Amino acid sequence: MSQTITEKILAKHCGKDEVKPGELINAKLDLVMCHDVTTTPAIDMLREYDINAVFNPDKIVIMPDHFVPNKDIKSAEMVRKIRLWAKEMGIEAFYELGRHGVCHALLPEQGHVRPGMTIVGADSHTCTHGALGAFSTGIGSTDLAASLATGELWFKVPESILFIINGNLFKGVYAKDIILEIIRQIGVDGAMYKTMEFRGDIIDDLSIEARMTITNMAIEAGAKSGIIAADQKTVDYVRNRTDVAFEIIKSDKNAHYDKVIEIDVSHLEPMVAFPHLPSNGKAISSIETIPVDQAYIGSCTNGRIEDLRIAAEIMQGKHIAKGTRCIVIPATTEIWKQANKEGLLDIFMDAGATVSSPTCGACLGGHMGVIASGERCISTTNRNFVGRMGSPESEVYLASPATVAVSALAGVICDPRDQ
Image 1: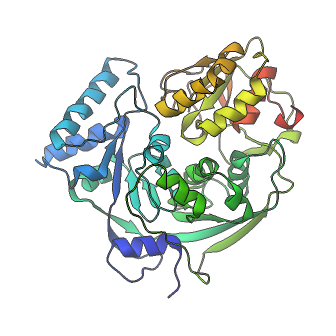
Image 2: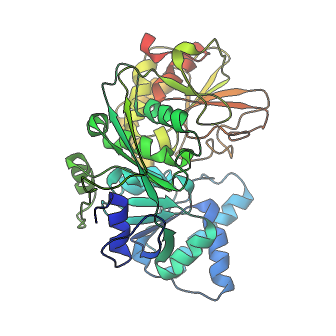
């Protein structure tokens, strides 16, 4: 039987020759990712059932990122609890403040993600890591506890939707615009509990970082996972970070898909997702003048070095509009250091932006960029639900780093193609 890449990976990890969509399986896990917010409830559950060991400390990675640097006593106590538990369990891969970062940027950067793996993380955007040809999905704290204890987890094998992306990307149009357009077309429930598999000339041409932007937002269409088959770019990226062996798995040519959706992006414009859904995307040419109070560049979607370079090129020698504030947060310590080395941070600060230590804080309205009632923020993040970045009476607009950068300079949402 012909199978998709996702079916093949899951079959291998549950000891079967093949699996079918809808089938319930128990799969062995290659990697379990934990961060600060969702891990403490999992620890409490393990304690409640007197489970005082993990299945394999070498397959667990912990990276506090949502409220670091700790924003208050409660968050400090939360991270301390995880830190002490990790030491007790013998988990070496604990990314402490100063060598830390947003989990979905840090995990592949540090060589933990390889093609063919099964990865779970107690965060919905764990689907990011499918960009490297792995099955990767988000889970809750209860499933995290089970995963930490057993190294296995049950899944319903998802159906797959194949997205074939071809054409040519023109100036000012990026991976973020592609995924916003896809979600606009199929809606926030258009891939409910399915795998979004991406293929095509455009996907081949994208960098690994840009591919991560696309798989990162698969969850915003309701998907179980997003995935892109590994190619030479993937191999080079992974080999530069680890020498651990891996297997490249690809879909069979005649694999069955629930749907095949072909999109020509040759005429795609920069996209902006209006409040309060990622699916509420609009082409930039259709947008009237919309003032913004804040511009945010960062997150697990667009806080990588490639994103910062795009934004800095636009902002160099210019200044952020009066009445608009701009926050730039590199996604990891290594990205921060590289951006500093390249002079990008000076460009941002000379333009009037502020640059922070890596954190998820602003994205979820936790700290380091919370917006007030009546304020608008244009952001490179992945969600714009009611109250996502602060007050329920605020508004969040999602866009690429280029669109956010040019909008910060103008004080209104602008077209980056005009730069």
